[in-house]
Length: 263
Image: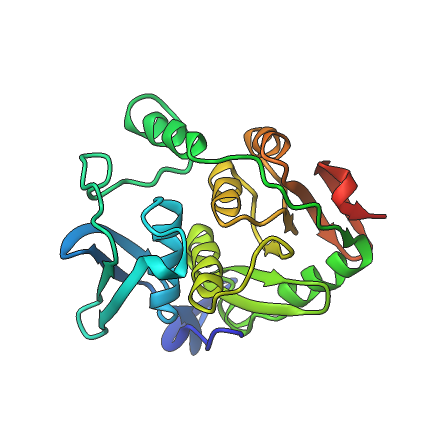
């Protein structure tokens, strides 16, 4: 599954070496999506349009609120106001750390560090022994890299996808790389796709948060066109996730668990 184009055309003035002209440019959508769990506001996600259910469910997987399809009782979406209600089959402990959480791109002092520690403590090493051929991973990352119409038009989104031994199963774009991953993971859960034999493919940097998201969803291999961070590599080592970076053309770097990649 691929996502529809997430952009619109706007009139602009182009300036070039002292001269100007009227023109048109494609720009990427950006909207707020407010997520409620059992009628309690959890977070407002700034995201691209489309795949709102997938985004909300993927986000809730990483929050530890939803772990399997049967945890979802109902999903209601008010598209006009950007409001999503997710009702769970069991009550959720609505503690201070649960409500209106702030997501940071790094772990510093205070709450961000507390959330990071809590996220890591929820993870266990994956049991999957799934292996992927290096040539196949490079084929899949090529499909991701050149498969986004929105990126080609706007250069304003990140892409993420899920693949198996044969093909890409789902691909989504978003202004936020975390959001793009959440859309993929939400799609997998909503369609009840097993993840123990899948790989997660990314257009952007692999940070610790991205690696944690993969771990929460049980994905044993993460591949990116870009670089990983040192903490992402450490977590991949710890939780039995193969981490591949700089996968482009006929090259890649394997940073953890090389036994999962058939060279």
